[in-house]
Length: 593
Image (cartoon, rainbow, N blue to C red; front, side, top):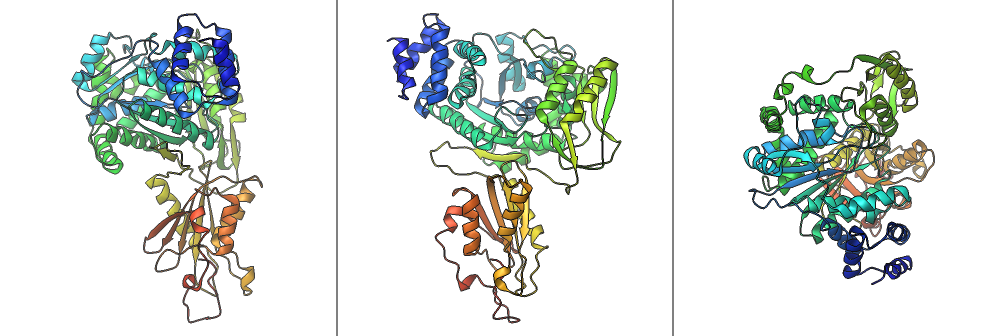
């Protein structure tokens, strides 16, 4: 084989064979394939892509390019968790002890951070005495004895990925979903887990800015795992604001401890329950996600989760007293607050920019050689959608000099926007991918469905229906997590009546500045004895602004729900069976259905 021919083949958009991929990875690792040729291939992949089989073969070749861990001597299903990265992402520190307390072995290899804050290893090293450089023998013994160990990733895990990523970073070839998926999954496969739960972040503070790209990445990684004989689930989660309140190493450890005490922020707790439930199901300790969530919540409430954290910290040489005495964690010498510049509702908390402010304080690394200050960082006092009063603390700055604190406060002014809209809640979990089949189906969690149906129910109370008395509420979930509602508004001239679905769509268009909508899901609740379908006009409007696979839930006041999709609605005609039988006006049609 010749690398020239492989590059040329991919440049023309042809699929590489298993043998070609194995040959080029082996040659790249042993130095026979030079960096400039591998860079050329990476660029060809960026332009031409790779199919599912190619991506899986590339992943497995990179996973097998170095040492592969084998945990088969440890009883139970070993489950790993990976996040694609975000600001304030403290989930591993909570999930490890929490899921281990449920009886699922956690044998996790983690890395250091490069960017706004440290990685899991950096955060754990904020705990006095905590060691992450334990021997493999001690690591295995610890997992057997207390179900959890977290150590630094060894250099010989997937060395081909390490070399390839270094080239991609300097050749503008990072932004390729097959290369991203194979990079992540090669390390996960080499780490030896039986099952993997993937937290794919979406939004301003994430690598994947758009939900469609994030879902494509999630599907690619789940597909790779399946082809490699591993179980995998991917959860798409919103990252338009920092997760939790804390951004910084010791500050995030403190928040993780509070969460394990069942006193943590609502969003961090919810995400850990969501990801943890998937891990527990994958680990065979619960049959359903709901059963697993109930188990994890009990472990938070009865103290078993925080006790497992203490056992974990003590086993790796750390001072387990931090779980009871947070003052033992490193503390900054200067604490100042960025004050709210106006009354209103927090409409924007730019996650990435906030993370960079924390990095400049010393919480992260701009380059690999930078030294992290574990004490510094930021603590949010308000989250997106919450009200704020001018002059009250909005973000707390933890610094080790007055100058650094003042500089951070000045930088934070560009990170926050306060407006006059009503308070709002943005859903945290956007999607779950369990099967990366070619069909473009949309999965929405039970909690997201419940939130959407409740929003539609509340919107129904705002309906203006003096003629038909047939009240309808609709709710749309947009790609950024916002929920926009609408109700039907009647007019004596029936043709001028506006249905709930159209009210919601038109309102969403206005709030989106007239830009095209990307609707994730739709819920409609009607004043009827059973779920009814939208009228023909509404179906046409929904088809105009929603993808065919967009899920639609049609509900009634008794709690009945009929699931369908926008495409599923289109074949059905609008008929008299959907009209509200009302003796007050036989001539009046329902304002919506």
